[in-house]
Each structure stands twice: as structure tokens, then as C-alpha cells.
Image 1: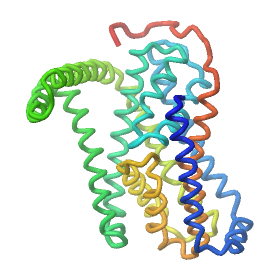
Image 2 (image 1 turned 180 degrees about the vertical axis):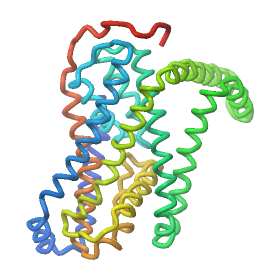
Image 3 (image 1 turned 120 degrees about the vertical axis):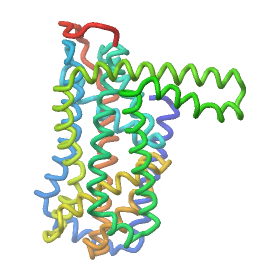
Length: 347
């Protein structure tokens, strides 16, 4: 980890402590302590297990993709990948650092750079598609509730959906209409050329064309592994489901048993979508505020609402970050990766 990333990590941890302290300003500490002592540990453990399954399933998916052409890849190395991803997603704006960090981690484990890029590409396509599908269903269930509680937050929800939907459309265009996509990019680049120097414009255009071509070649390989993709789609669905269920089990741990699991899960999906468009790493501030406002109708006790928010944030954000720190200092296995090549061609 670079010095800059270490500084950002310290800043984010300090910001988290500050947000937690601010959230506790109007809370009776004796009541909070009472709520902690009387928490239903079994349901809290289920929430923790949900997060472990979330990371574990992604690790299995990573291993499946890597070994699909005969490469050896230990489950120990596979577990490192989602944890390192969580760490760098948590300290970079818009979670932009997760993909490059995974690439480096895979290469450290002995996976060839082109193969590692292919694995991450396939993971990204499936994950992004499943997020959009889940969000569409959640939008139908929980949008009216959000619009009623906070009309301005509904704008962020719609904006977040449009961004993720646009990404999927762009990926599909490259995969199925490669030539048209390159022409479309050329048209979009024309007005950009009016504001930048020609050398920089040409450099950007060449780089973008190269990335589009690379993605197209990788997508051809993806489509040839449709059986594997179906398995990964199903596994990703359950991976995200376990993640989205975390607030529900936190509420059960605080004694709220009559809540609607579908509504709570849908609202969590929408919160995650809102967090994704906040420029601050991890959506800090916005995440806590959104949780507090949206779930206040389910949790009427102020101390329990703050406690639920703190537990939720610890599990869904800081748990992965600390796991990522541990994974980062863990040496990857040094194995001879290539055993049998099931597929040929350039990756």
C-alpha cells in the first residue's frame, strides 16, 4: 500500500470515529449500554455470517474463473481478492481502487496479467448486471417509500440507477455491436477535441480504442463460457442477497421481529445504490444519514437506531477494510499456476 493510501485509510478511520461520535450526541449512553447488553447475539451472528458468505462466495467465483482454463489457484489466495477489493474500494472515491488492487493481488498470486484482467472483466460484467436487476425490483418496492420520506434522496436513487444502467448498456454495445460502439465513441470524442490539445486528444482516443478492442476480445471468450457464466450469475445473486439481508438481521438482533423482510432488503439495495454515487470514499456521511432516515420508521428507539447504524456500518464497511489490511500483509501462495490449458488463444 502506498503512503498516500495509508494516509487516506487513517483519514477514513478518523472520519468514521467522528461520524459515530456525532451520531451519539443525542443518545442516552445508559440506554445505549442497556441495548447492547440485551442484544440478541444469535441474530447478530447471522448478520456476521451473511458478510462472511458475501466475501466467501466472491472468493469462490474468483477461483472458478481462474481455474476455468486449467490454472491452479488456492482458496487461500482466492479469499485475499475480495478482501483487498473491499479495502481499496473503501479508501478511493466511487470505489475506483478496487479493480486495480484486485489485478495486482491476482498477479502477486501468479496469475498472468492478461488472464487476471479477463477474470476481473467477467466478474465485473456479472456483478454489474445483477446489481441493476436487483435494483430494478427494489425500485418497484421501495421507491415510493423513499420519495415519501426524502424526496431529494429519490433523485440520487434514480441518478445512481441511470449510471449503473448506462454502464451495462455500454458493456452490451461493446460485446454485440463492436463496430457501431467505436463509431459512437468517435462521435462523442469530437466535442472533447474542441477543448483539449490535439496530442492529448489523439492519445486519449488511441487508449480508448485499445480498451474497447480488448474488452471485445475478452467478451468473445466470456460468451464461449456460458455454462460457467450461468453458475456465476446464480452465485452472485446469493452473494448480493446475503449482503442485502444484513440490516434485517441487525433489526432482529435488536428485538424488532414484526418487520417486512422484503421492504427492509429493498431499502438496503437502494441505500447501496445511493452510496455508490457519493464521491467520498465509502460514501461516508451519506451512508449513515441514509440509513438513519430510511430505517427510522422501523426502529423507533433513538438509541437502537444509532446502534443499528453503527453495527451495519461496522459489518458492511469496516469489517471488509480490516480484513483487507490483513489480506494485504498475507503472503500469497507460490505455486506453479499453469497445469492444463483448456482454452487456447490470446487472453
